Length: 111
Image (cartoon, rainbow, N blue to C red):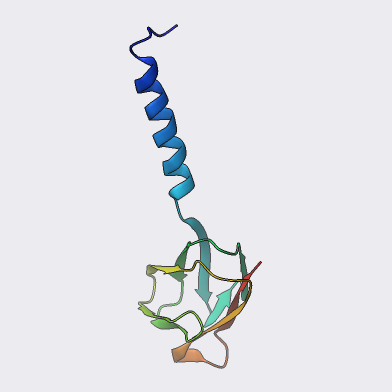
């Protein structure tokens, strides 16, 4: 059993650790493969900041572009990029791969 003088320190560490976990951004993965986003529809929670990790598995660059999310990022072939979005209200937010707009189409669905 810890002595009485260590109890406040233990409580502080426990509280700080709990807040650090709550403050972490939810992380979601999105891939680009054969000039398509996988998954094409990504479901995320509402009212929460999201860390979107996009892995371009193609050998050519692709640009993640979304007017509704106000985001634009070129991802070199074989590379990963992090894109932060939100917090968002429930709805559907479309995005495209600007270099392959006919095939690289997707949406973030916020629930």
